[in-house]
Length: 319
Image 1 (cartoon, rainbow, N blue to C red):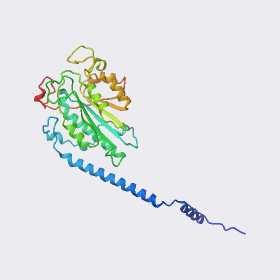
Image 2 (tube, rainbow, N blue to C red):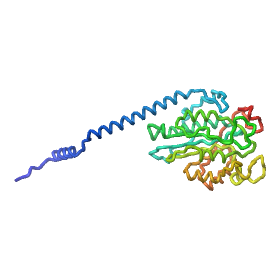
Image 3 (cartoon, rainbow, N blue to C red):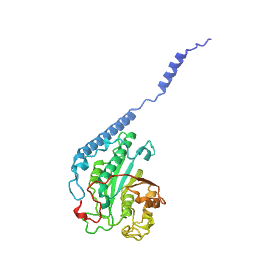
Image 4 (cartoon, rainbow, N blue to C red):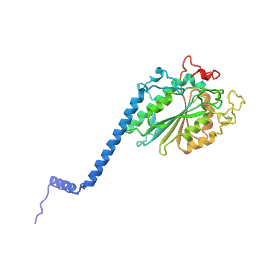
């Protein structure tokens, strides 16, 4: 008996039919589960969209400084979106990771009187840097509401007696996904105090590393904008005995040990970026580098005309 020789086209159709028959047809319960998952995703997207709309509505609220004074509207008009050049290339900062679930960024800022002429430029720099981060994150995900959080910690110095509404160190904004809450805290900053060159760096670092609500699985970053080195000759590298440079050459009088703080920073896998306004931090950066990896950079910010950073002036008359 002669077998019928099938054409190539007939064999192809036969194979397609077999493949079709082998496909598993979803059950009714599987279809239901899939529908429920789709609805849950849509609901979450709608909730996040609503939250973002609420944030946008609060965008134009009046901003006050930490004493409750109305801020200059000109300080609020800066639009980082108008600047196309990135301050930080966050794709590189994030090592081009494709699947990002959480990123926590904390800005640590010296707010002593000597910073006052540079404060407006620093605020703009922080806004631009945070916008660069938001823009970079959006390249990886369609919905970044819970992914990126910002925090803000400020510090001054230990001799704050007689200065109204002052502090040695303070968390102005714990990590928060609402950018406008962070932005309002940023714009409320004023500069006071500090009667020597060195500042309460250890106290600010302690709050940023140990008291901020870091998420366990997040990529963690600190951007430390610093005007003067820390107290203690071990880390500022100066043994001059000059109290105008350092009133506390044995280190922080509050007992915050920089060595222990840096070890804690390293243990939490926090990336540390030290941003200087001049070359006065070179010794401190070198000393820190013995314990952690320091990403060190110097930025040029022009001081505002007519704004004094003289620490001998009365802080209570200069908000």
